[in-house]
Length: 274
Image (cartoon, rainbow, N blue to C red; front, side, top):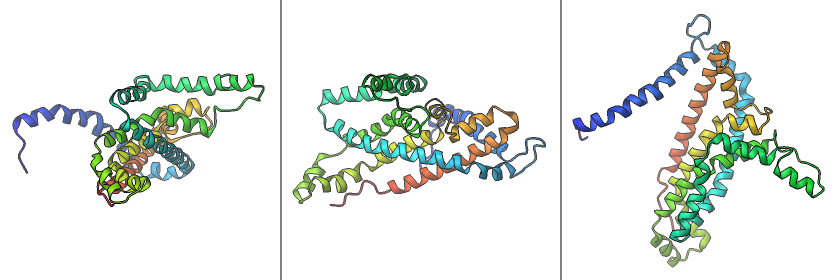
């Protein structure tokens, strides 16, 4: 391996310092509190063993995150494909329209959804104007998942769109010349070549979805207790601080495992089978 020059090491020093203080440091503190007793400070596994009572919370959070990620993929992949096939000017317009919500705070975007879904919101106002009974939207599973999809959809579209813009269209022409129909071109050429973008998009949607807490609090109406809500509540009380750290540690391990699995499935994703 080529030895790094003095300039390269100096240039990397600020990033290493930042990572040590704001990434590795907090992880060490979380691990410390997860394995220590809140009263004596001695090593213990009690915090981790108490997590069996939170199995329902883990299951709901994982289910909501998987549904939101799947829907984002089903919506985002065709959208990214249409954006990549658009003309230069239209492509720029569509990209700006996709990124506009990302320039707005997550809090404001969530409140805008509340204004639409609330009992006195725009949707129910329109329904009652038609003479139909009101629908209960806030405090449902659909509202929470809709909030995740709305807030995280751009993170799915952009990586896939980037992969598709780099796609060499000569491969598509070659596949057609070899007798592939449109479905076969999509499944055997386009999808394998854009798989790195799909994996990046799935990762960027799944990770914040499983750890979110503000969306579930506002759109779930306090009915659904997700992992992010549980961790936030535990860290607000000193006697539950260590259990909250244990939940955080387990969630980080689950996220790392999911990332490892997705990266393994993405290996060789650029191979073409015609």
